[in-house]
Image 1 (cartoon, rainbow, N blue to C red):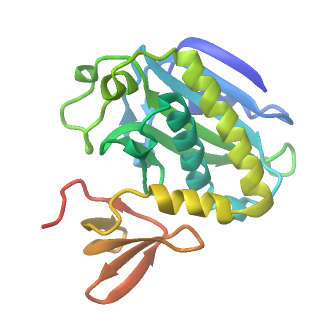
Image 2 (image 1 turned 45 degrees about the vertical axis):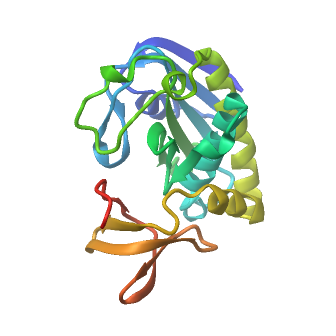
Image 3 (image 1 turned 135 degrees about the horizontal axis):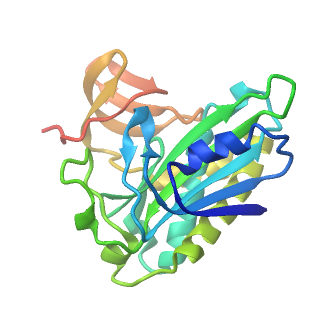
Length: 249
């Protein structure tokens, strides 16, 4: 896998999209020591100081665009595997917050942003998987008004990590998970790991979706990777939306 590294860049996802205008036939890894305009879901800013693993994987798509609807879940499993491997101890402390954040002790330690760039028949379609992992910096550097409490691997686990070791582990597991996803979709292996590691199962939460906010008990995910909520109206499967950050009573 070819890697291009920058000391400072606006966003590895943005740079990955710029580089993907060329005829990308093999996976390309874009990394940066820090980002000045890192991006999260829904256009939110992602704080990216020195001491974090900021990377984007450009993946030439082998399936039609619609086949990648749940690719963020495969990416979340990949990041989960990498961080559990690096942590070595207490892997159960790491969980996936649907659809694409990784938590440690209910604090956000990694986020994922998946995008597609369609080649229009001129060049291959590509999937861009952006990953940010908070590794060694002081969490006090992060804004105090984040939607979800955040931490770093160093703070949570009490030891330092080489950023390049984190990047290597994440990239390796991403490539393996994408290979599996393209051949099997959300197959039994990915689904089992998601279900076993899903945060908030059995708890009451508020869910925010385009249709409004609703309260329900988190019941897991279905075979398509949709989040299941048990509500007064019955069990509902959601494929879009996010958890509100205030726990329901």
